[in-house]
Image (cartoon, rainbow, N blue to C red; front, side, top):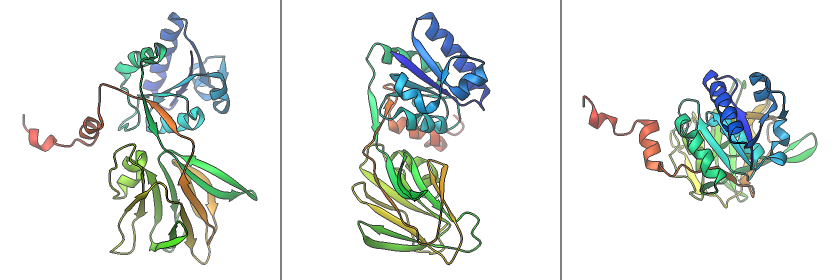
Length: 285
């Protein structure tokens, strides 16, 4: 078993945790390698570029927040990912720092279980070629620096759903429902639900609401505007500036993500702890 380790190098506690992890693995003669940027920050000589890690390793360890796990998962593809939370909210990172070593031991002895998560696939033309971009959380088209309010045209399986005048459109998986979509007023959806949610950002129409659809649907989005360019983001990373009337297609990806599960917690507990649900009933106790 060989582990690939990806660290949020902007967090000092993640770097401290990475040093402890490297020492712990070395003491047990467990093979590991850091991705290049993490290794440079930790002054470790041997490293592998993030694009090549999946070829050299059997499992990934992410030390950071949800953003670090999203970054690692894109390169892990279907290999198991242990998410250790060294950030703040952390919906995706299953394990606390205190649980890190026990989580790794379950992977080493083969007693771990997996949360399988679906991804989105956005098809768009880049450099005169159609490219397929994957996103675990969401695909977002925004108005960016455009000074007016554009109209977003959305079709489901080729049939018009609606035209939204808004600051942007979020298409999120059930996993991503607790990310940008939730901040924009979208619903929280239990993981592994076979649905997507389309959430408008600051719609300029009183009747517009988020809509939950089957993940078997194919979604087409274009921006109706006389000019301008509009950012296309996948999991928070800018992929292209879209032109007016340019169409992108979003559907369920055939590539899944395998997150190592924390058997000591359930989703209801995560929501209560992360969102502080029910705390008003215990006020003053």
